[in-house]
Image 1 (cartoon, rainbow, N blue to C red):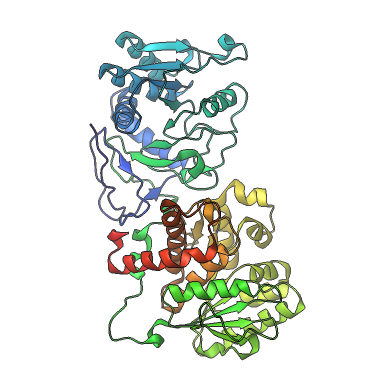
Image 2: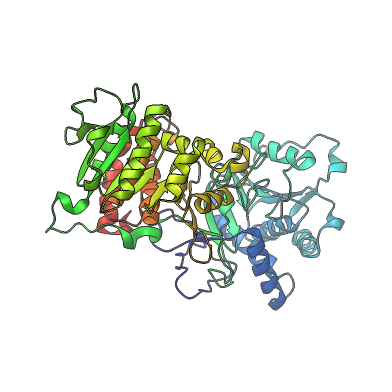
Length: 544
């Protein structure tokens, strides 16, 4: 039985693995995992097919899929759904290999066999010659009603549509996608869940698989927007081609390899000053909990000193939950003593908030030691609505991280939310360029973008950790405080954001795995697991 293979680093020379090997997409990988858009994958395919015998690449894909299904799919009969393109051909080859190995399988082809592309047509003929149970079910044969899934079927294999999708699935194919969902059976997807856009993760409608075997390399759409709901666990099948491919990647997966070398060392000969001073600014009337959540998170992530500057007056005198915090009216925050600032949690967007924000920007830019900024929540809304504030930030030398959710991102970019979500990587790139900031575009598959380099290139990473438990009030405040804590400890802005986003999601995954959430998970419950995970990273990034 084929077993998964370790992913090689993108900084290492390309590795050629066995033609039927696959790689687990490990969310805690200490090797970089590149992501490739459809155009790059097509170029790799074209280069490979020019040098390989006819039908070889499809044979490799089908052989790997068969081994992968034998490893992961439950025992018992499998039904493979094959579409009208080469993705259907991959499913046919896989069915043939499984049948030859003694597995009970059948294939339903949703097209006319004599209209298949050349390689897929050959796969159909070989499956028929091998004695695979085949059934052709083109639209003309179904008359609007799809056949019932056989009652003894244990799992479905999705080979309906591949990465070449250029419009949302509709009509006959949308019927099949709904049919798979209605079956209640586990679905295993080949290359990409049918209906999901490989570049963007848009998937309405799309198959929801429990596991996906993606060919040649991972695609960004598997990890963001609808991707994680549709793809489930992801494995990568390089098909015996050099991995990673020589084509430029469009992004990377945000894993410890992205940030491990920048983690702050914790040596014995240190004191609280070694790990910086952070101030969390916000907390207008009725919203004092927001900066408290962020400040408590910063303490748990190792900041040496943590202050809160409250807009609400009188400011609270003490946090009874975390008395280590230092609480002040905002006017009493000594900006010159701060290593980093988190601005925005619970701040509000009224006149007083706007004036305080302007003073903070001016005072921070004039400080002898420039603090790094995390701009969150209402700070983002103020920037989006006030051109004078935006101009102050634009002209400022301050390093900044901005943490918008999609609505805040839309305001900052002057676009609609649908436009932001239509292509989250492009939206993060646009914001990083427009605001000259590290952008954390929150959501399922948070996208982290660096400011443009000297050539105008924007480095992108997509976060693979987290779950629906984070969809609750206060988790964004916690994330902002985490980023601020790492900035205060001297991490570069990009790596601080990547580390915090990864830990934030990983802590939620840990809680859910141990029975807390996703429903009812609260923001403050993230503190303990994120601290444990952070210390595990500091000891050994491979141990997380």
